[in-house]
Length: 174
Image 1 (cartoon, rainbow, N blue to C red):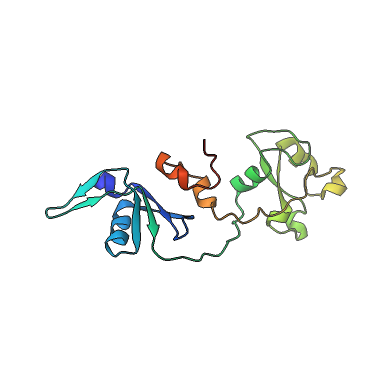
Image 2 (tube, rainbow, N blue to C red):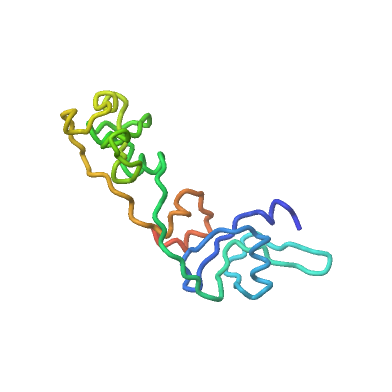
């Protein structure tokens, strides 16, 4: 088996065709061989062993349903900026050089949580300093809150292969 092909990404669909995960070709072949999955798209040809040929799948579908809970996203700098659309939540300026601001400062028992962290430009962050927005005479454009759980979050941060797009419900089909 070619090592570059065996580590290529394979889209794994749930029994109901919902995108579930991404694995590599090697793992997909194991699932197919154990009849835990079926081949839907073979976009890479075949892999050959001394005695047998195997399809190198691009998309497989599990033969059983996997229930997965909707997980809350962890708080990260990048995700706060994406939630706030790289816009300062005090003055509305858009920039790629943002800072995180704690609405209620941490030293005043403001938590490091989705509902207390916003994107702020550097001048607004300095102006607000260690005060609350009310004390600094500033207003928030939007009240901060946690993003809604998204079962497809895993796929939105990675490049999607063309043969996967038909299985992505959020992609527009032409």
